[in-house]
Length: 426
Image 1 (spheres, rainbow, N blue to C red):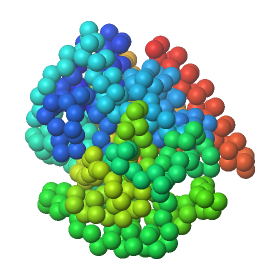
Image 2 (image 1 turned 90 degrees about the horizontal axis):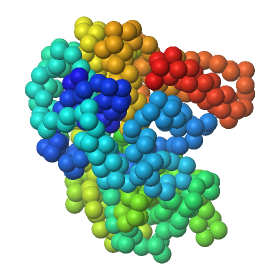
Image 3 (image 1 turned 180 degrees about the vertical axis):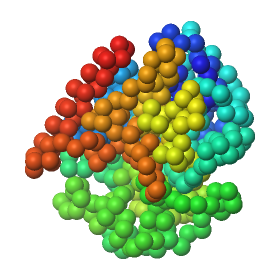
Image 4 (image 1 turned 90 degrees about the vertical axis):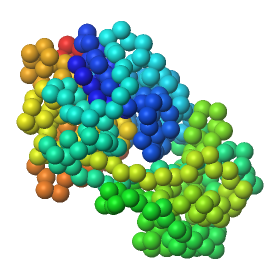
């Protein structure tokens, strides 16, 4: 079976099929890279090293990760093998993560990795070329299905040794974690000056084909700040759950370890499209970063996704060709974990199709199943969707304790995913 694209979704699909006896031809443009990529390895994480919360019973994305583990997810195995401390989140060393997946795929006896840029849609197989689908394939998908696009922005990364620790403190919000975040407090005067500089800083010019709508989940920090002076202070720079020198700072930028060695830190919530020189000037106004060495500046790039309700079924197969599947962020699931999950499910469905069996979508009580149904349900205002409790099939509405309700939803979901796995015989 041909799979086009070896990001998170394509890697998951290839691994599942190969593990179940299917010969896979995995086509990827690497070592050629898009403007957002830097490594020749497969399954590269671009915007962040965080796979979000690992709380199975209190967070929908944490629950989704556990569902994936129980279905044999490759990326969840890779995440455990490359994990770095991040409090209650699952964060990874990005180089180790992609290196792990690359080794598994390239060494699998049922997988042949081909390095080339695919220009046409295959008649059958799985297309998982991600949000940066390029060239002829982008044109082919648009001509056949129509394509929408929005923008995604990544945050800068600074060298750990260049952070002024006299103006920073180690603490996890509300004490949840093991001291995995480095906090950069700001006074009211410092914060106000920073915001004013941020909103007036010069932005990188977008190409004509990149102009369009910005997805709320990846809002550049300068766009967010322009909505009002206190927007950041009630968003990514919120000081709640943190104390410094006996009091609460006016605003706080959190830094998260970018790798296992802790030699680099990611500016949490600071996705940006400012010019590189402006990024250094503006972010250096934060006291802890006054001498920061930037190892990577933030970039903004085009994300592409299908209007899936019009062209995909809930099993991720094309409405005009049941043997052609799509997976990943191009289907309208938003986020690393969600993208990987869609690839895993596309692999499951394609495997059943090859066996002459009907595809079976996971129950709507699971996050896997709920997201599958979301991308296929009629929706005139279709937008990408993260894992959340709102997409799950209803239940336990009478339980007023939100923590308990989430726990009950999680227990129900894990029981359902277990029964789903058994029914498939995998």
